[in-house]
Length: 89
Image (tube, rainbow, N blue to C red; front, side):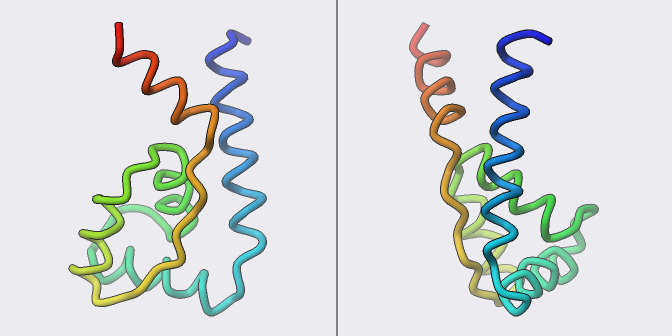
């Protein structure tokens, strides 16, 4: 496994662990948002995407389009740092 693969695997674990801390009602809001926006993913998948990309604008748009309020995931620190250094080259 490459260092990048290991980093991404850790990021998924981080996001999954945080998802487990959500209440059932909070998880249901993420599921509802994906359904209302006709996304081809589940709420958990959207959560992982939000945590690993650290892009709040996407979640802002989904909240607006789905008329929901979503608890925001903590952006995965290692991936956010990697993206900033990657774009700097």
